[in-house]
Length: 148
Image (cartoon, rainbow, N blue to C red; front, top):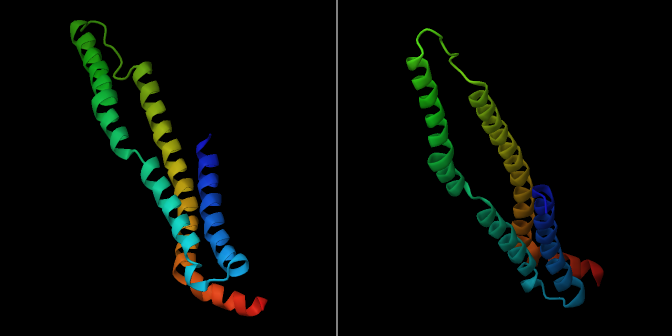
């Protein structure tokens, strides 16, 4: 499942449980004091996804232990080649190093875009779930009165 599809799924499940719980305790089993339960479930789904999906620590660790040492080794090799052949001066940057840095920059940008989308979905789902959990009883009382 793609990242965007996951965000949509979490958003839909969160909003459905929030509004579904409100609907259930208004229409099917009128009980305004329980109407916020769906919002609490929606909030739990959203926050659970938030904490499980963000693996910043492992990404940072991988960069420190894997990517940076490889780049340093490549730079060191370039310096050694340059010092052994003084007659023929090697360029300061190699195409391979430029390509790696370009890929790393693109990866960071793609990751940033994904997090912006994720933040929007999670913020919307959290707001809806929080409002339903906090004010579900008030909304349910009003709706029950209107539907009578």
